[in-house]
Length: 481
Ligand code: URA
Image 1 (tube, rainbow, N blue to C red):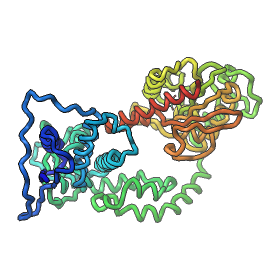
Image 2 (cartoon, rainbow, N blue to C red):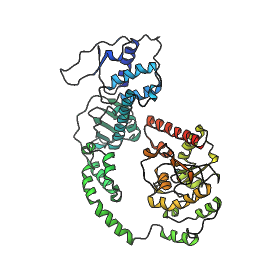
Image 3 (cartoon, rainbow, N blue to C red):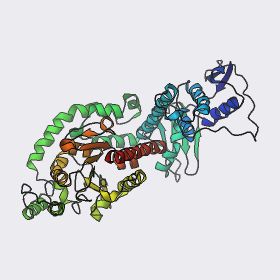
Image 4 (cartoon, protein in one colour):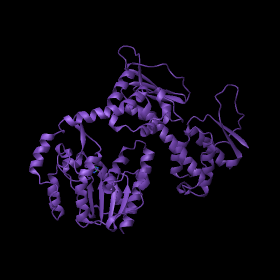
């Protein structure tokens, strides 16, 4: 048995170099005892020398790029088993290059779970790092320090994210698993463990004020909060001690809000009143063609969203389309252009259907909600999710579109579309990808909304989710056929 001892602090090159030399020397997985170098003084493993590096002109080992992507993430995991699992998979890949596609393979599935855990830890780091200002000499850039306790060796991996996000200040992120620092010119990382610095500053109070002001008691979901913000991070979050009090007061606050609501005029009520004077009552019999319906919808005032949107964005496509695609609501570009799904999310959709061989001009594309809902931020209009009441009001139009077009297959993109079509609130993961029988012999196929793909910060995960979305489009093509 050959003992290989690694520093094991998330350095992919360290493992790769060792694995390459061992594999080139033909050393089998069960002939290696992989160990992590202990940080405790006086406790060191006896290590065996690695075989020499393969000669420079030796044929390089050929492993699928997907293995490299997986290994680079898994190496950051803190489980000591990662080295032997990766090495074993590496050997098996030499026999079967498609092994990574076998989700049921035990090693692949263990490594995928490790990969997921590292991604999750990295996501938590982006959410829960809180910088605190420290004294800087007069005239110099402001300096900040943050303390974070990750589960895995993710600091070097996440450092470029913080460099991009906080580029105009000097900062240091210290963790028990290493550190990262940015001084405006150089990003440096180290895997030497740090001690917790003693820091608290005026930004703590700012954070607390901000957090208390954005806390909406009417939207309180304790379980979701606990899942998103596990307690282990609380001790380093300045706002954490506010949370129990905010939760305890939530019910009384919601009641008080409801009472106030009754005495306040509806937002934009003047415009709603004017519009409703112009509009035929929605209960009037719908005309029998899509064009007539589109004209009626152009003056819709069933909910307050019409008051701020530029125009109604009605569905588009042949009136006998076999497939109807239902998305959420128009975005900024659609609101200005007057057509559904032509902005960034629409482009992702167009590319995916094109590769699946689906012709967009044969689809009827529409939204669950026909007006753009947004919050103004300076010159920008920031998308806001429609609420259940708005979706229910707009279902009036969607139902009429379905009655007229009579598609055989309906594609719901995202949870809002699914709710509008079925009246059910479901986790998308539970309904995605398998056709659901609907009234009148129709099939409903559920997938994610393309704007979800655009929001994924991690490039590996984004590529993975995009590939899944494309598979969904292939399935739609097959179902339609
Ligand atoms: N997102 C949607 O859900 N629909 C659009 O039309 C544009 C963006």
